[in-house]
Image 1: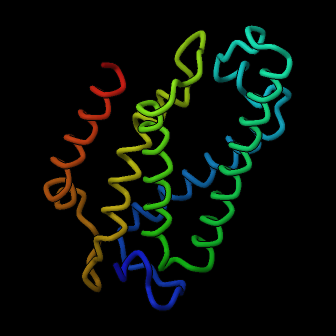
Image 2: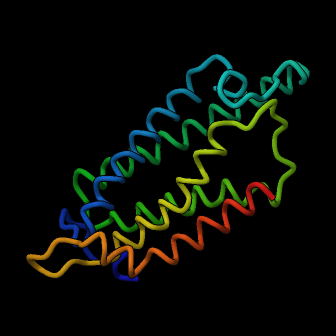
Image 3: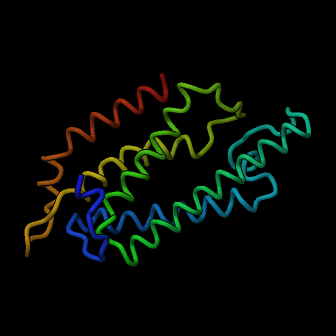
Length: 179
């Protein structure tokens, strides 16, 4: 628990460098998706997500666009917080990965508890999330794995140690998504 919530948040990260650098890609994705959802005229709902806004009443379509805009704000804010972690509080990198893992997993799990949104085709976010969820979980594990002083992480060691778990997670997600 001290790895996720250290007593002192500082700029020292002892986890895998891979987890640190891949986190920058998630921040970039958060910023880009957030900006698109906040500022696109349809919030990206129809132009990207293939939600047929024409099938809604004007009020319904406006509500969907507003929800996409709010979702974009959430993505942008998470990106800002994680950007601050990467610049000043690297000891919180495992917490950032836990947040991304929870957020992306929540998107997948929400389909089990909500009716979902009718789309004309599979939105790119659904396809991308099948990769981002297990990758976030894998990077969380990498970020928690501390290296011995003077030694670099060995991809072979990391795969042997965590590869079977990742493979199992990927298979479960793919089977659940397309079942």
